[in-house]
Structure formats: C-alpha cells, structure tokens
Amino acid sequence: MNKVALFPGTFDPITIGHLDIIYRSLPLFDKLVIGIGRNANKTAMFSEDQRLQWINDLFKDNNKVSAIVYEGLTVECCKKIGAGFILRGIRYVSDFEYEKAIADMNRSLANDIETVFLTCLPQYTSVASTLVRDVIRNGGDASPFLPEPVTRSLKK
Image 1 (tube, rainbow, N blue to C red):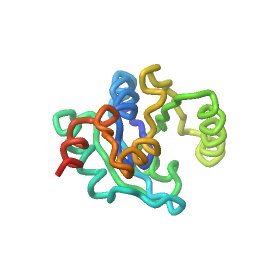
Image 2 (tube, rainbow, N blue to C red):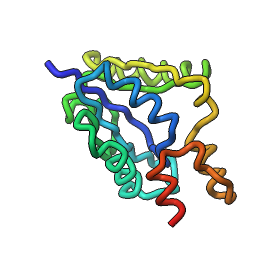
Image 3 (tube, rainbow, N blue to C red):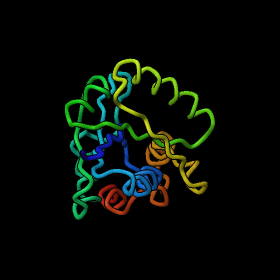
Image 4 (tube, rainbow, N blue to C red):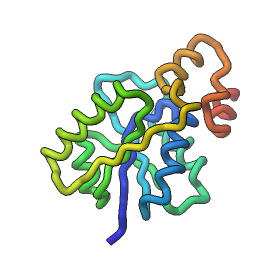
C-alpha cells in the first residue's frame, strides 16, 4: 500500500516555508499531493492557474510530488486521490491549537485519514503567505521568502 499524503493550503503564493515542509516530508511518504484549496472566505492574490504553475515548475523533476486544485472538504479530496494522510506545517504553538482542532474534525469525518504535523525550521517561522502578500502589495522585496520560479514570474 502506498503512503499518499495531501498537503492542503492556498499557497498564495508558495513560500520557502512551504518548501521546507514539503522537502522534509518526502522521506515519509511515497507520494505527496499539494492541494490548492478553494476557500470561499479568502480572496486570493494570485490565480489558481498561476499557483498551480509555480508548484508544477518547482517539482517538474520530482515524480513523488504533484499538485491539484480542490474544493470542499479536505478529507473528501483525500478519499478522491487515495491519500491516507494530511500533512500540515506548524510554526508556532498557536498554529498547533488551530491545526489540532481541524485534525480532530477531520478524524471525526474520516477516521482512517491521519494528520501529520511537521514543525518548520526556526529560520522559517516568520515566513507566512499573508505576510509575503503584504510585502508584495506594498512594493517590498519578497524574494528572500519565495522560491526562484515565483520571484522570477513576479518580476515580469
């Protein structure tokens, strides 16, 4: 049985903090699907197509990683793609409290899908897509927080 994980998020944009979690999770799973979730409560800065393109560019040479766009419950997406795990990254203790509540709800909805938490490395604790978007909106240099393909496309 393959160990497939879904890493859900908006990835608006994908950051070096996301990459930290992705790369460190790869030894744990046979396949990792990055799930760009549609969130009706959030207005994205970048289109789904752009975010999907960035992820596909970043992992074009890694057959263990793929990306999809999904809508609805994360556990339903997991069932659709055959994922037995949900991967989540945690920066702070407050993240854990929030993420644990979501993991408990997901377990109530699908007790055969396990949530795996990875803490980010200390140098990435301040890297959040929300903060990166603020830097971009205000004309700052967000390149220290972004993978090269994202930085390159923003300069165009």
